Length: 394
Image (cartoon, rainbow, N blue to C red; front, side, top):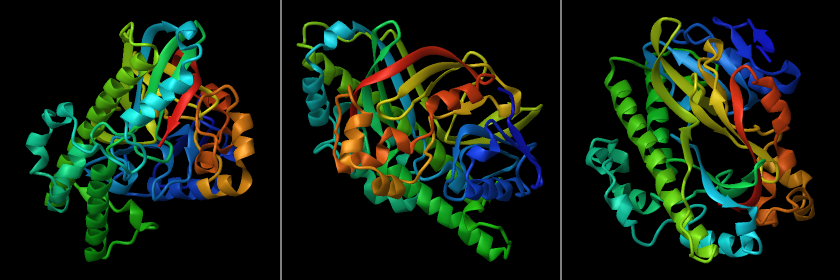
């Protein structure tokens, strides 16, 4: 569908690919606050998985001129998805899913944990050459950052095996820049807020504090942002290597997994792009780039469907699409509302944890992925439709 609604209360319009009734009032307030910033260009595009965030709304695409908002990028810099189509079909997984899940959980540190020693591939990453130029506050975290390269993280990060509608097996994972990215983000968000206080500038939300191009603070953040985004991308590549080995072992080790298609994309990041004839900074806060022909990943929740998509290059959306189903209730509300028994019912047929520790990730805590996909039919076309059969959560 085309734009579902336009909010005009801000300095620039907010164009929403959803019905306004499906957007929380607090998220609408956030969007208007962001639209009132003097650095925002043209309009804000809001994806159909929109929901409340910290400062900036999740599911928003924010174009800015000569400035960037660190809290809009967020604390999981470079968080994103990787998906691989393999040569196997469902018969290869028959009776082996539990063993594959156990192999993955043994091979990959989950939650806040890390490898005992950095992976050899992590030590060889070229990005370490630039690490000494990152914020001084993270220099003491070098060893931890090395040991966390190739780890999953917690929250909504996951590793899945899926089947598409042609019975082919896909591997899909979701992770970001781990502790090092969070620390860098927090330092620069505080720097932006500090500058806001110094200039006595008033904003409706301090989390919308922005850094202006040409300042040393902007330059430092832009450097660290690019470094953390590269780290997140590499993290997913190394995670894939570990998942491939664990899957091959679980399948009996007789045949290597052959990636037939690989998609690796950020959905929390900023980049310089050209839109409406001008170079601008595009911040995708829970959104995927969907330029003409560009591949992307839109996951549902554990137990529902996910989609591999190809962008249509919609200029009004700044060549973007949603990054998932989007939460319809907070984690704390989900824990109050649902039980482990509810989780078991809603993830029937999926090899995964089914305990209270992950009940906040229950499918009903998320929006209906089918509705989300209908709302962005003018942003992407579906290349493959996937259904999870195995899910590992951090």
